[in-house]
Image 1 (cartoon, rainbow, N blue to C red):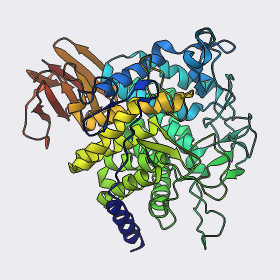
Image 2 (image 1 turned 180 degrees about the vertical axis):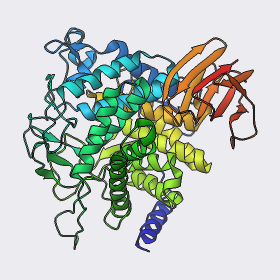
Image 3 (image 1 turned 135 degrees about the horizontal axis):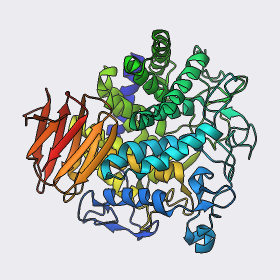
Amino acid sequence: MMRKNLYYVIFVFLFANALVFSETTRETLCTHKAVYDDTAGLLAWYKPDVPGAAYDHVIDLAANFIKTGCPTEPTTHLPLYMVHSWFLSPREAGQEKFEKGLSGSDDGHTPACTYANFVESLVLRYYPYSGDDSYIGIVGRCLDHLLEHGTTPAGWTWANCPYASANPRSSEYFGATHWGVGGRNDGPFVIEPDKVADMGLEYLNFYKVTGQSKYLKAATDCADALVKNVRVPSKRTSRTDKPFRSPWPFRVSAENGQVHEQYTANVIGAIALFDELVCLKDRLGLPQEKAAGYKRVRRVAWDWLFSTEGPMRTFVWKGYFEDIPHDEYNRNRVQNIPLETARYLITHPGLDRLIDVDVPAIIYWVATAFGTDDMDAIKEQFWCYAGMGSHTARYASICAMWYERTKNEWFKQQACRFFNWATYVCDKDGYVVVGPDFPAQYWFSDGYGDYIRHFIDGIAAIPEWAPADENHLLRSTSVVQKISYKLNEIAYRTYDNTATEVLRITAKPKSITVAGNKITERADLDAEGWTWQPLKKGGVLKIRHTGGPEITINM
């Protein structure tokens, strides 16, 4: 009853206020001239008359900056994204200083978050979308460095775990000492268990792409540390008590397990990691006892998430960002944890029987708690309350995915409006700024690792936004290991034999084969086959394959 009453209050409040966001009427937004439609609604800055064209454009610009535009830091000889959290562009730093790799910030570096997001955006999303496999090598270099120079020793309480923070211009990652313990950042030899889970999941995904066993070991090391250190979440007896404990603390000394901050709502990464490992236990050869431990601890996290003290009921969504002061009394709130929880629920709809209540509740709460009065933008958190591009794109992507499920036009309109605004933070040279209130900060974790994937998820949910004159694989339920785009053929391989893909292509296929065997066009995907939805140019192709991982589309 408590849960239903909470949602009822949220829905009544939101619909009463109609969730109307005021459109900005600024002449410029970041580095672009603002473009409006006849109703003063903000359009994207690039090809505003072509819906979705700018979304494809900005992800290309951002991805290409990581590939070809990012300078090398001179003392470590590493790319800026491996030793800095953010940088100044040539506009602020000057061309010479930028090219010499001297424009990185003095803030602590965020390796685990940045590299986990790189796997998601550049390897799992952008590589299948573009066919450019160079990003596998770029991200692999980051992961290898984290394993070699940013992982806790084997004998510690939190053994073989990645560090969430590091000092700027340091090739060795061991927590950030720049502000010290109790200040802005973790402190020396302090880790964040939610980043252990997030990075463990991406080690596993990278293993699926490359087949290299060191990434599988890194993933299971992270999972084992989470199993070893899980705790029974405590309950508070009154709202004036000190905050209760989550299944894992937010900040903890890796060597001895001393807790520096008790609470984080971010458990969905751990749940996803355990789900994947349990599902693949036979294929990976995991011992039954180990798999049983993963399943048990996964249940602890899931039950807590939906419990009377869990964030799905309390909406105490906090405990993510590395550069925020310690929040002993849980006064801060963030938007990324609930929205990423919603993403997992949408992509795994059978897990939550109340998904049609839970996901809209999250979307509406984020819209009201983090919306911006004069812009279609989403703020990052209560303690950094300004509209930001990556978080706005995140909100838009969840709205797009929920529209795909429900066909409710309001969510599609929200996705379009907020994606349009988010395009403005990327300039024509691929520099992705935080937002108009942070005109000289270009964060690698947000503007590149986070930003790119949200646009691709949105396009996958609404394929009409993909380029009409190009071929793109937009989404797969499996990890895509390899893909090639040729003039009259698209060929790709997935990690799993059974999966479903969504593509936007320029013409209806002549034939499709799975492991060399032709599959047939169908009215639906209840069995192996493919469906075709024609658009004004080209159309949307959906493929379900159960007979193998090798797919060839002949056009």
